[in-house]
Length: 602
Picture 1 (cartoon, rainbow, N blue to C red):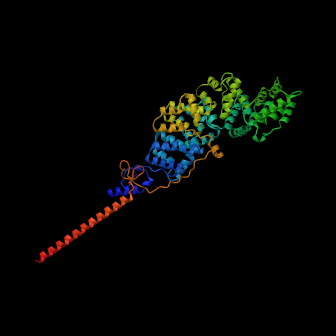
Picture 2: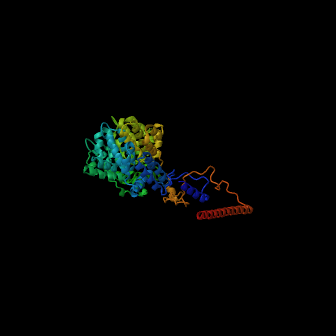
């Protein structure tokens, strides 16, 4: 050991010009003393995969959560990629490609409880996990209505069919059957039309309900024919034929209450097709046709139907403006005057007035009309006008409702409806993030049950793009911070994971800045290794103040020529003395040998 120490000190002295006077902390050497961790050499994703694999092998839940949620965000955000997309497309895929194994299997094996459920939801398809949460909400004693409302009433149009497929694949029954068995009344109708049927199937059912049975609900038919776009109307007609085995036009024509100009108008609107809409109509010719139809003796209803039935809502508004410029009068008021009378059809006039009114404003009129039924609300009217609206469309409808009626649509819903039916309708009208925030609050109000934990996980995972808005809406709803509430209600690693989910902010504008060259994406190549000197392993600390001659320490003074000459003289004198001493010892030994030999002879 002493020889090893001397060797290490000698090596350090030889390379001291590259090092400071005080050696670094001890590293693991042949003597096994101390150690420092070497930096990982590789790309950021390789480092995450390496650390994640080690954490899974060690069963370190905290490190698993940190690498999968926190460190991934630091890597993907500067590249303009959402964390949830980076985890699914990069981390999970390359974890297997680099030979670490199957990430889902490893997470499932090394974690447990609610944290396992959260991490598996993060690695799973969003709609597949939503299907599991819906099943738990309807399974067993009672039903979690808040969970059903939050998930089914906030679905995007393109998510409805994949959710049905995911639920049917996992539980071998349709989601519609499950909802029908666990809910009832008007609440069931809202959930089915909003979350279990596409927009064309929902409108086809509304039309069938208006036609079938005793009498005909002409108002329901007018509402749909006036507010449907050509594309939605064409799909609704196809869905009606698929569901009920007959053409919607034939079904309406066979009704006794549908006749004359009203019948021709409804059939013309039902036959609307996107390909029949002229992108740039000849407004001058249409204005002349309409002027000729309302001037003179009588009214040419057929001409009015031909002009209005093949145009979109935006084109009709442009036509009204062109008519006003040409003739100085309002087209809507002139048509209303021409179709009002003892022998005129009220339904035909109502259809024309609906077409000549801006679409969102007319929907606001229909909603107010649904509140003013004879004995109670027109529930089919409320539901059909609220389901399958985009967030921007619903925002404009609420705005027009306030402008036209001087009241809040949400306030009127709460005033005229009650219970879960009220909650479901409000969820359709409120901003999507606000509804999800209410669902989170409801999930934490019954914290003990696993179903509520599952709902909480479903509402926080796969929300990276809207998480900032979700935090703002939660604070408006509860006047508390979402992160603080999660810390108060949860604990342990599950709390850390939820807080990491809720604290995330999506990158905004980075992709455009990268495309324009304003920013540069981080390089995914591993960093070039720095040139290193010989690796030195230390086994003992330096003396206090460092070794002599090192940086910052005084070295040996430089000798003069006289001192060097005297030093050489002293060395020569010592050599001479040693030589004389050796000669004297040799002569004494020779004399002793001769005396001993003479004594032997004697």
